[in-house]
Length: 302
Image (tube, rainbow, N blue to C red; front, side):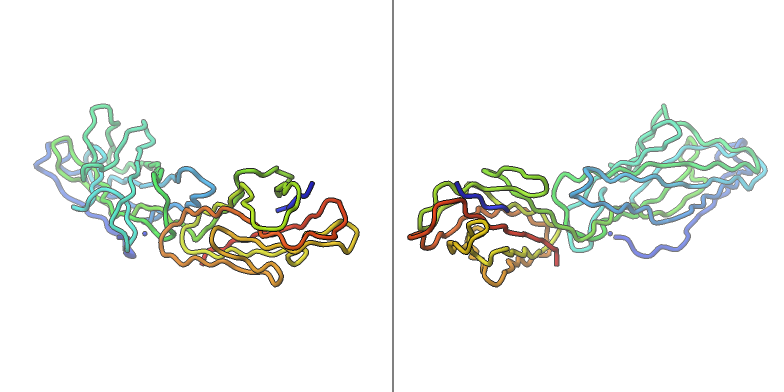
């Protein structure tokens, strides 16, 4: 028995527009509503290999600086762009959802502007009143993401019931994906704490597939480092008896004597699978027993 241990988001200034809307009716004749924000860049940091969804909460402050009540509804618009967050070098867009947390109203601009909903809670501020609105931003990517910033510019508006704007605020929403990589073993392996063991059975000279694979998920190109505790030898415990062997990751032969690195260049996300195989050297005149080595794999994006 033998074992082998193995973001179109430009920098934005403060943008707020205020209208006098005498045509909107007497209730809003002298309404002067302003929208301010603790931050205009609503971007969530998202590790795709640690989180299934990206979730964040952000605030807008409404202030009525006029002499009459301000009454309206929240609406969002995409400034004529297609809906979805996009990275500068990409074409495809990532959908997202925006929710007004006051009563759970969806204000996502899926058709370029958010839908008017009868159930939406209106904004109603008396002269001198202020109200903080909180919004949830949720992004659940359907495909692998490369690292970078995926963003969209939005206008948050408070409109009168007949569609006249009372105030607007320009905000960037998005997710920021860091350079990250993940790897693991699958197939005929036995888990042993932080590692895994592959049983080689009876050793015979020649090449054999191990029935196991090293899989890699990465937001970009990556390097796999491989080292052998015994520098490419299966060793009988507490003795000098050993059997040389080699390792291949898919079609890539690995130098276990000196340690080696497999590099994959890419500016796109990667999903790769490397079937493992070994080449057993001369087994003649070796003492019977259990020969082992420990391989160490590391991965880093570049």
